[in-house]
Image (cartoon, rainbow, N blue to C red; front, side, top):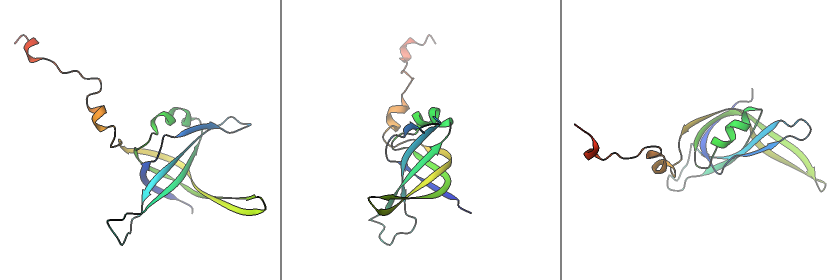
Length: 127
C-alpha cells in the first residue's frame, strides 16, 4: 500500500497547466513540511515536497491554493525515473488524491478580518 499524508504550508501559489494531447488540467505546488522528530528544537528541519493533482477540479481549486496556506494532503508517493544526457535520474513527488484547507496564511489574517465590513458610527443609530 502506498499512502502519503502530509500537513504543511504552501511555498507559493499553485501553477495550473494542461496535459498535452488530452488537455486534462494539472495543478502543481510545493508543500513545506516540518519533520516530526528533531534533536535541536531551535533549528527545525523542513522538507519541501513537490505535489501534483490532476483532474477537472484543478481549474477551480487552483485560485485558492495560494502561498502560506496551511493544508493537509493525502496521496501516494511517486518516483519518476528518467535519463538525461546518459545519466539516470529520479524525481520524487506526491500524487495528490485530496487536499483540505486547515487555516489561512499568517500574512492574510489582518487583511481578511475587516474585509467586507465597514464600521458604523453609533451616533447614526436612532435609539
